[in-house]
Length: 281
Image (tube, rainbow, N blue to C red; front, side, top):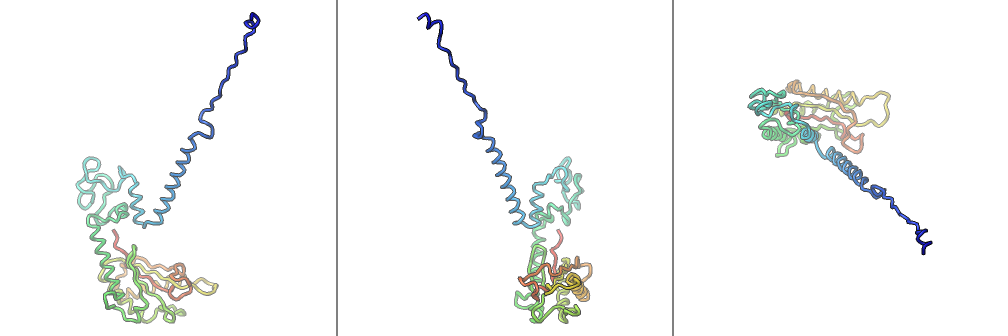
């Protein structure tokens, strides 16, 4: 008994090591993964918006996220730093910003489709005027101002850019002589009709030339020059028919780069596009 008291049992202490964060079972990775998924969602949303919107809509979206104070081009028409009775400079010059006008609004308002206080009415009137020109050419209301043999070479469509009037070749009936580049005799007649119809509106005019692809590789590139020369030739016909030269905003040649058929050598790709541009806002 005395010996047991002199040699007590040794005391054993167990210490458990605790690892902070739980190793790979921690939650830090979840935060990083959530940030990654959010970034990917924003990226695909951006890609979808770029594909599904027009240029004007994209300008409107960009303007929505742009700071408006104090670098906005127009003032709010209020008191203090944004003083002025109206943001339009025709009425009262704004104290902050350059001041917009009801006839020449800022790019931001253009991106939203606005052109002043009566922009909806102005857009509707412009669209109606362009549609009337298209109807007169295509004969949608029963009678066309063009004879049948010319109407077969004409197509119209209304786009965001304006009214596009296509004059195109048909098999065996080309709008320009392939050897001399001279326009067909009836091209002067259609130019006269267009000049007469264009006098009913004030829209600017753009002329674009297109040619069909060539079947073989040639020593000298001629398609760019041919498409430009044909556009210039029709510009001359329009001006000779009474269209004021100042109405023509641009004349361009696109060679064979914008084919409208699967066969790049099809006569249908040889065409002129005369565009009545939408009124500037």
